[in-house]
Length: 252
Ligand code: NI
Image (cartoon, rainbow, N blue to C red; front, side, top):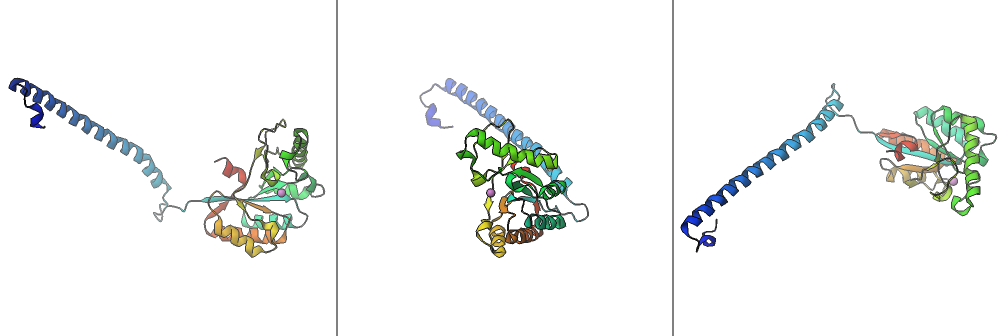
């Protein structure tokens, strides 16, 4: 305490004041200790479940934690294609990989068996409009017809409702109301696979930029894309990536 602050105050008052301030200091110190203890105990409460969780995740044999799974999704637009889609499906099946296909209604006729196979093999099928249109440039009625006709066609084959849409050009009108709610799925990596016939280039682009939770845009209308996609899977599976359908990534 600063003694000068007390000069000029009678001695008995000074004593009383020192006493009061002393009590206040003791009280404050006790409060501080309580706060410290509270902070520490809160810390322990927070840490315990985390430690238990980590302990539970450890493999008992090795004592090591398993590598965390990094999820990514391959998505293929504009199909189905009469040759390349099945070739892609063969490769996905061999590798145990699920992908997402955004189909054009106008491409489905005559390829119903391919669409059925996609569904049966666990791939996610979404809507890419009927004629590959820019939804935002159409009257709502026409835009809805593009979507509803395509969904109906897919559902007729698979028996499953279509919940997701990839709007061509990435242009989506979120206020569009077509009786059914469609959830748009965009992308985070555009391979630009349609600009090159070179599989190496596509593989390089994806493998060098990919991160966890990426949604990769490709088109199953090219030989080079199928080759690239399967090589990408082989390379990234070796790095611990897990390939999932795109709905898994947007719902997290
Ligand atoms: Ni497209």
